[in-house]
Length: 119
Image (cartoon, helix red, strand yellow):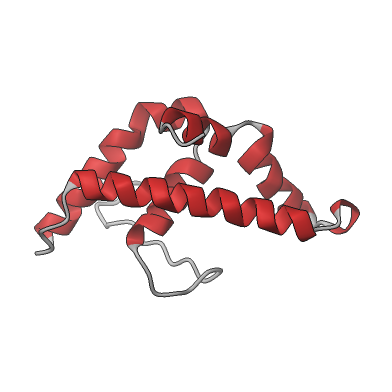
């Protein structure tokens, strides 16, 4: 059933303090197929800024969020490459193989790098 309650996401896998752009980039660049990301990326970033503004956070322009997300994308790719460099493919769990396939198999991260002029 549909409700009017807001959606709340708690990510306990990687609890840490840092810029929200890291989590946003993880969802936008890692969870969405390339074509879907292209369709909604700008709207998602603009909505994030709007939500911040409605909650009294100002002084964080959309251009800075885009820059922060690009940096987070680079960090995500570097982290994935580092993780894979030390991984033994035959010992990867099913979930780890899914993460690898989602990141590189369908080109999500590589396409995002190219789309943002970072490749």
